[in-house]
Image (cartoon, rainbow, N blue to C red):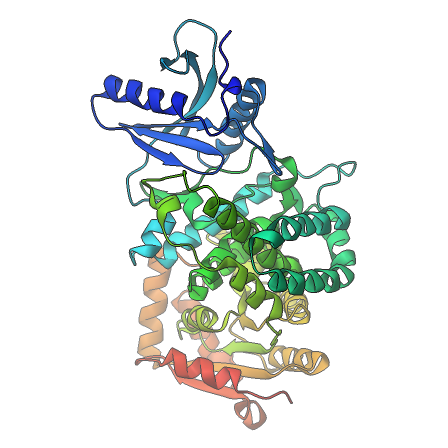
Length: 524
């Protein structure tokens, strides 16, 4: 029988002939996209991905049987996140010089058939064109958190997510990368890896025992996500190496946040992290996220170095044709960054704009946010936008409030100890609640401040009424709740005002200046 495995890995006979056949079938030009391990043919409304018969340190597609197996696995895995895109696996029949998709005869290769999305839909393309919006990133990160919650957990008998496996994977990348780039940078990162191994071994074990190691996407950079209709979909997940997809969910997220940092969009990286945390509640992931961001940057640096060594590889797609960031520099910068934990709590009546300001501040500072409205609902198994009345639940009892603030404190403690600035987004209308967090900051030796937001009562009423009617916010406070708050809240005392950043939100707020003020607050 004919097999394309008999062709040398750099032989382009099959792909050229298949491209010509597809052009004859669809009556229009067919675009070829090429990476270091695959070809993709864009023909009309379909895309066909054929795996190159290559054997590399991290992948072996050298036999027909392996390419079929990995095509089928790619279909199954990607249908978890993008069922609209991944359709079927088709045999390539005929001969390398005269192939066709499907039909009678012995297969000589296999192709994953996908629904083609519009040109310019990749998030990498949208970012380059200046069109990428925070809402798209939030949608993707939120969907990723939901996907992680459903994904199967690694069995205790497997090596996935063990400290030995994590460290060895990073060492392997550094070892492969060293002869391709600046050896001094790689040696610096080797030293960093040894230090992180000592610091994080117990944390990795805890994460694995807690079920954080799951069957993830594994390759979620900006060129592997696209706007398809009203949805942002992740695609092209890792199928060829289980060790690269059976990972900590924090490692999966870190690829996205790292890539945004590398492209100079730390604001969007902060929005991605916030959306993922609000959906998942996994604040313990912050203990390992920076490690994984360095590791992910090293993987992209390796891919870029390998691609540079394949001058025959051409692409008509911005997915591979754009100028890549300096991922090695990104890895070094992340590894050498110094933690700067600090704590900010918000204070103000419903509708005062504290959540809006908290979100804008985290964009500028890289802080993480814990929202009382979200964490309160999580205690009752509710999603952020679920309405407690619809479930006949009273989530605003004194006991529920006590548990909510304990949860906020626990999350803040984890994040601060991991080196992150933290914003607690809550009304904090009781002096005792505010004092508890001031004590927490003193206990951890981090700067503490209060973001005091206020606006005239008619403005508050109008905002609360509009928010209640929209139903797109986690808060369930209505005008009646606002009225009770006005009557019963405990204003900041003189000592608290000394720690307060006072902001009137009925006018324009200089968020950049506010961020500078917060970051300048010294430790007590």
